[in-house]
Amino acid sequence: MKKLFGTKRLLALALTGSLLLSPALAAGTEEKFPAVNTYSGYADVQETDWFYQNAKLCYETGLMTGTDVGFEPGKFLSQAEAVALAARVGATLRGETIPTLLPEEPWWGPYYRYLFPFVGGPNYPEGNAGRAQFLSILYDCVEPLLNPINSVKELPDPDLGNIVPVLKYYNAGILTGVDKYGTFHGERPLTRAEAAAMVSRIIRPELRISFTPADYSPFTAAYLTPDTVMFDTGITAEEYLITVNNAIAAWEAALGDDFNWHYIWTDGKSVLNHVKEDSLSALGVTARQGMQAYKDFDVQVYYSRLIDLTGKPLQPDYAVKPGELS
Image 1 (cartoon, helix red, strand yellow):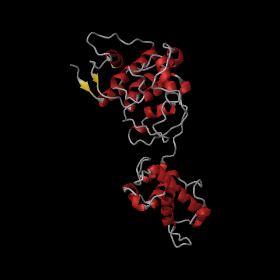
Image 2 (cartoon, helix red, strand yellow):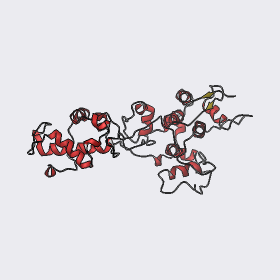
Image 3 (cartoon, one colour):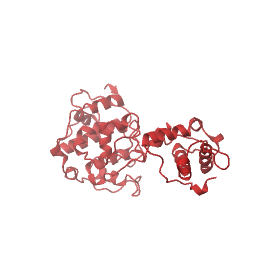
Image 4 (tube, helix red, strand yellow):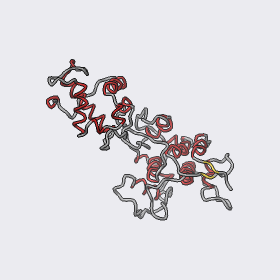
């Protein structure tokens, strides 16, 4: 019986791998990955799907051939499948061959032995592959191919998001994250569609994506994530902070140099109260519907931190016009 190991050990092996691709081998990926199969389509892949070209290319080049029920784009890639896919890419780039399957060896054994020749084993790659794990396995093979087309300097992720190898994938147009802010979520299991997208963008530079992450500073300033639920109606921090920023910007534009949180408007209410009320009204909710995240939110502290982070007040691109202020 082979010894079992999980995600952390396979990730560690990947990060200490010894197989490097020389710069000379980095050129001409299209010639190294020619079409070897004729794509006839998957029942579960439509031409309108974002991953259509990726799944098609991976099939044509023989890197991924689907399952017995289709491509299964939403299915998680197993660690064994991740090892096999990374080995196919690395061996093809180097012009090498995968070792022969040994008697009583599992199907993934030769791929594992190719990637990790000095480990002794093979050890069973257990469970699903994570997003960071797969890119780490690939990194030594493809690093010379990661020519930058973007200028992403940091990501929202508190842990893996800002390490250099991950940023190199973003700047090469291989990754754009799971949302418009570029969030990596490296701990999440990798889907087959995501794996196909990553690999196809590596071997076909024309498929790479120019990407500039949306401004994440409001969420940093608010100590919130975009998907934090603020109200029992399901309104998230993304919706709420946009509305709060609109209200603040409107009052700043209306009052100019007189803007301050305690300025009293003609109706006897302070700017602070108006910002809170205007935001709730625009969202169609009441303070009583607020979840704990809303109750903990301090508008003044938030805006002070936002200015500290960005170095400037909000731009006057707001939904509520000064003439509409109550």
